Length: 224
Image (cartoon, rainbow, N blue to C red):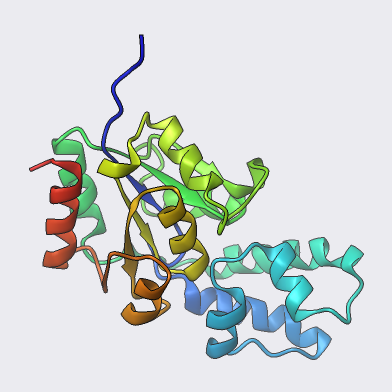
């Protein structure tokens, strides 16, 4: 007997649960500057945001042997975790999670970030136990922008994409969630609304208190 699919919420982590871009920019720049490459805000948005380190470093450091990229990526992520000491949730996030709990709407995290980073963010937000699952691209055959991470999130929550909502701040993330059949809300921590909508976001919002965002979630999920 098949189980009836349910509405659910799927959240990216970096730039979506917390605004970590400024920390990532500093960490990347500190590492890549050792190889003569500067990562400023424009470079970060165009060539880093939402991608996995393997692809980022192949793009930024083509003059460095590919065999060294993994170690460079590990150094950068360790530096990020060392620097990420004052993370706070995006405005309205905790209230939204409280509402979701009150209407029995399950939610999970879906991220291209390394496990240690994801665990650090959720632990800092005191939200580790709240999320029903954490989907890590490192555990899958394909990362975002492939739809597999979000399809996996839906599968783990017995979720129906047509009733569910994803929250993303990067082009790769929006493309992934949109391709998985989710209604995507773009969070404008990294990119502007027009850019996020151009790759599949249904609407864009600066934070989780946005009234249009709240209406969209209720309409999509059927939860009130």
